[in-house]
Amino acid sequence: MNRAARRLSYALLCAAGLVMAATGLGTLALGKPPMTHWVLMAHVALAPFFALGLAAVALTWSGACRGGADSPVSGPAQAMLWVVLLCGLVVMLSGVLPMTPLFGAHGQHVLYLTHRYSAIVLTAAVLLHLPLLARRRAIT
Image (cartoon, rainbow, N blue to C red; front, side, top):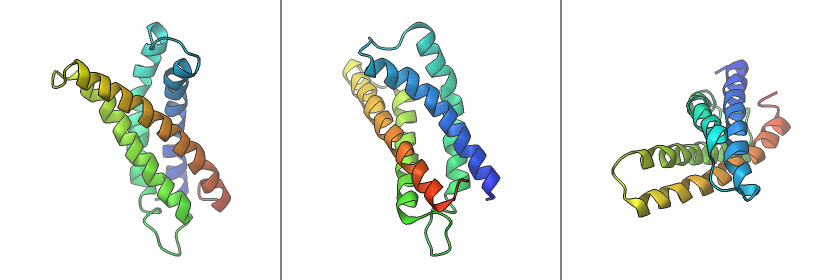
């Protein structure tokens, strides 16, 4: 894929992820109760854009991150991208599965905690991935 498509897909993922991290992790960091009102609405409204951004990143970056000496992406950045994609999938599934009648109260609580902690790992992975890309000039 060309560089512009990779940049656009990553920008979409980061923009949606920034709002979702601010609403989700921000309330956690401030010691507030679980999201309510407009904060929850903003978080849920951006979820489809996050999912589209994650899918676009998977499609546009996976070819460059399969390895090889001629790859525009360094080895650590390649590994970090796969962590981002895996955590993103876990975040999405653990956010959607509690909306089904398949899990009891305990299962929903476990999925909620899975969503929270995988989102923290995802945020950290993206924050580590961006400087690795910029150093190799894969995204600039």
